Length: 160
Image 1 (tube, rainbow, N blue to C red):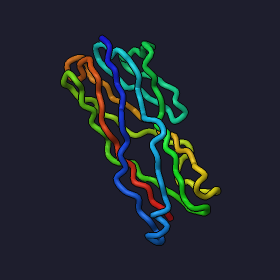
Image 2 (tube, helix red, strand yellow; image 1 turned 120 degrees about the horizontal axis):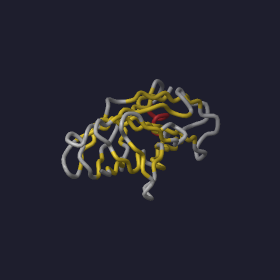
Image 3 (cartoon, one colour; image 1 turned 30 degrees about the vertical axis):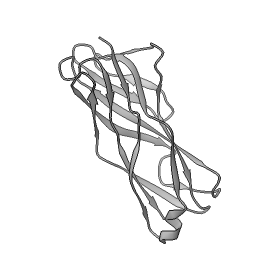
């Protein structure tokens, strides 16, 4: 059984500011690359697929990673903010991914590189890259049947 998983979009709940509204208006966050888990077979018991912040993929349980030309990757965000800004971030709740043939999987936001908070040394238009991994919990073939799965996750950014 082959299951293809991708997360096509990242949504941001909010950008909070610890100083002035004008400063938060100068912050721009761009989704440069989506978090993708690639192609895999869930096996009889399922397990987890872990994408590290550096893009490396590992699996647990009965999940078998497959290389059928579908990429797996960490999410990459670009942050533009004034020099001297400090940006912290808080991960939202676990995301529920829904499948094209029914079924669901749960995705937890993983570690980031760099870990927060981020100190912006070069102001806009320079960009600071933030790489974010994820942990996908894959069920058995009944709860997570083959198909394309998608969903969104949320991160709040706090500008100080």
